[in-house]
Image 1 (cartoon, rainbow, N blue to C red):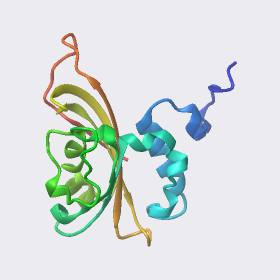
Image 2 (cartoon, rainbow, N blue to C red):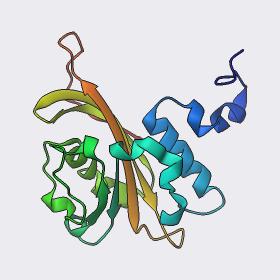
Image 3 (cartoon, rainbow, N blue to C red):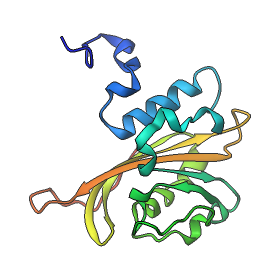
Length: 175
């Protein structure tokens, strides 16, 4: 049996190494969950870029403010932007183009803040002028374990193919 995947029963299957998981959202969610163990939410310092590795091009980090539109991007990975080189670092989420994967992700900040839980999002959108299928996560961070002061987002996508079923619905799963 491969060292990369060993069948296991129960919770042990969920503790498989981050490097063994092939799906971006699952890797980031698992890292967030591990860092949250024993406290409310992980701290910003717990989200180590080295642990996320090359996935940072598919991640964003938002410093939360009130109202939500005044929240600021700390960093936005190139794969979530409308064009390479158009940085949103330091911009408010209200300035984020809605026709980008970053825009789709931050449009879900209000329900995340009211529910105070992590959120997995799946659906169809337009990104860089093309129809896509995407899967992402928005995960709250907190210095004191209670007050959400940052949100980590991760998303990946693929082009929507003509044979894919078309649905305008977005699926939200709370974690």
